Length: 214
Image 1 (tube, one colour):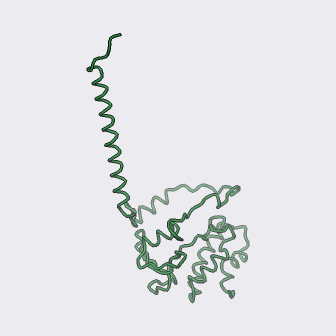
Image 2 (tube, rainbow, N blue to C red):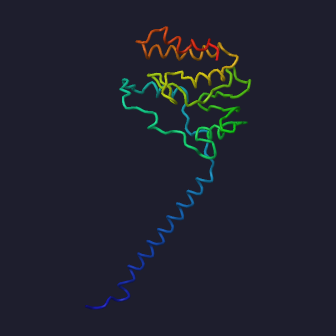
């Protein structure tokens, strides 16, 4: 067998060198892109927000499926807020990031601040701020209603659960009429979702407790 000449090895060596250069270039570009992304703070306002008319049109075009069975569902199977740093979870971190003059407690819960909504142009206040007609503005809670079954998203108890009732008492402190209007809107919707439930039962569940002492 004849030995291979230097010319036979040259093309292979050239291609191998090109491959190494390409790999190094791709790695360098990837590192530069990641560095640029990490260097930019997360934007509080998402891009491309549609107009109210466009959003409403798109919502109206959605097809709503019939209610299915809740058998086998468990909230514990869907972990949500993870700890980001210290005592702050994802939700609390975003509230601090997107708000103005935000004050948090030792557990990282926002106790006061101001949040602007680019979707409807509204500004929400929390804590003892008096700029908004509703006490404590728009509260953020994990104990919201899961509709149309009207269980609590945080503890699976019938909504409003004891925890949400305590939160609402604090949010609507000295504003019982506003609290009644807030819960009344939910009562109307719950009546439509659960027509088999006696009206008196739903009324006591949604509004009756507001007239009881703590």
